[in-house]
Image 1 (cartoon, helix red, strand yellow):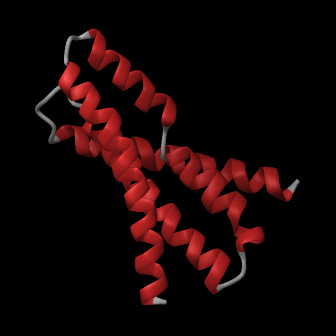
Image 2 (cartoon, helix red, strand yellow):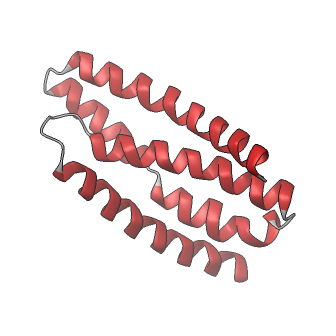
Image 3 (cartoon, rainbow, N blue to C red):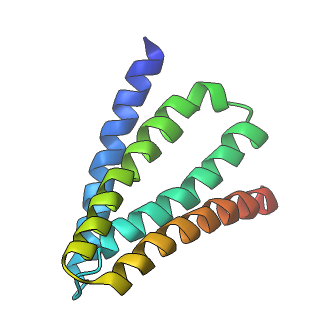
Length: 125
């Protein structure tokens, strides 16, 4: 039961964080490019790299905190479904270059962010 409650509470906090961060970024976005979702997914990927190293390698608490932080909070903070919808809408609106950049940039930068989050955390801790 703890596992499910931890995921639920982490997920609620992550969803609220995603909404706040995404809408904050979008206030400064003067284009059709979905910068809020783009930013949230890259930041979330960086944080998952950081927290995985902290929990798994440094504190050895991954089993206790993974449901809340990694699955719940960061799983809800990042969003593949919104990313997919945004990409399709860019294509439908005829913004083909933006859509391709969004897709490739999101995947590549998110992977790099997770990698650098892991590497930086290993170095600092």
